[in-house]
Amino acid sequence: MTGHRFHVVDVFTRGGERFTGNQLAVFHDAADADAAAALALTRETNFSECTFVDGPRADDGDGAGYDVRIFDPAEEIPFAGHPTLGTAAVLRELVGGGGGGGVSERDTGDPPDGPPDDLTLHLGVGPIDVWVEARDGREEYWMRQITPDLGGSVAPELVAPALGLDAADVDRRAPVRSVSTGLPTLVVPLTSVAAVERAATTDPAYTDLLDAVGEHNLLVVARGGVDGGDLHARVFADYAGVPEDPATGSAAGCLAGWLLEHGWLGDGPVAATVEQGYELGRPSRLRIRAERDVDGAPAVEVGAASSPSPRDDCCSAGGRTRGSHARHQPRHAERLQHHPHEEHAVHGEQRDRLGPVQL
Image 1 (cartoon, one colour):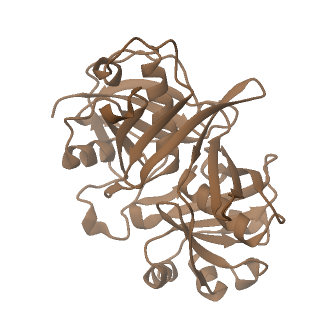
Image 2 (image 1 turned 90 degrees about the vertical axis):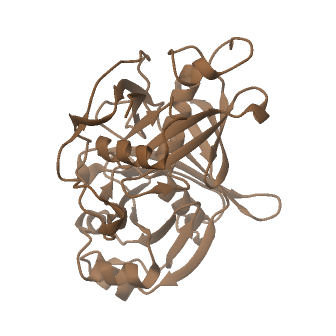
């Protein structure tokens, strides 16, 4: 397998701090990487997701639209939040002249005047727009997710044992409910931050829950925070080989739609900062917004509290590296033919040069 240039991005960092947020590898010259190669490279990084940029779309005119594939350790997935924002940050730097090779070499037309303020990524769920906003002297990356699909509710008595909690820890003022903006998430409101901190997926109760509701991210959330946030959350995705995720943009979008529907933070539009990843030692901050459009449909947006910071490298399957948080064998282990506990290899062959960026 030939080497592929990539950038490691910390997304949803806490104020731009290193070693916070969720890590992502963006392979920006990946048009020749088929699904098997992309999956192998994803497993080598040991991150929750990797993205593979197939190049700009000619039908977007200004070159701001890109075909992007997202992989987790088990398979290609139609959408994920931090990969969307992190990929947009890398592409914005490359298109704006911040780094050489890969996408920028294949782009056509006049040289750009500077990084674009908005990009469109064409993902499995369809086109997702990403744009940049200024806040307190910093750049924030925002995306609008697809319209939330609100599913059925689940009894607290079924959910609580799967999280090692008592049914009384589940807040009955809003339902435990499935929501999807591309990846289904079961939103579980809890009565306190302490309950969120105690939560842990346990077998066989966790398996019983997934048997009942299907493969879902499991998001537990409480009002208040430990670091100034409006909400404190954790996300479990054992079924995909991710026991716990430090920052989950797709689940945050589902949470925003759920909050708008059920008024758990009050009636009207939603605007909140979500803490996640603190229990993993990767503190992360996600911003969420939600409101109804002129037709009454929910519109949800998720933003990174600070801009992403790519770190660059090159890899092919077979060197030695390790991601920021450990994985274990997913529930559907037959979907994987590797051993996530082992250290996997990444051979350094060439290093791109991108200036520091952090989300």
